[in-house]
Amino acid sequence: MFRLFDMLGRSTAMRVLDDALRAAGLHPLLVPEPVKLTVIQLHKTHVDQSAGFTDAAQLLA
Image (cartoon, rainbow, N blue to C red; front, side, top):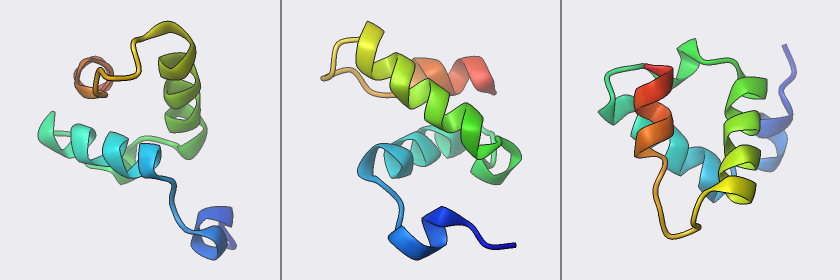
């Protein structure tokens, strides 16, 4: 299946979230892409930008 990320490459935020998910014990492929994009958007609007995705990744795991 054609995926947009394969063509454009992954964003920095998506890679950081994937790393945080791995650290929380959840493989990133088990989380659908729209869920990851929603987490990133919510993180940008409601959380301090210097904070990482560790809390969100632990919540998803």
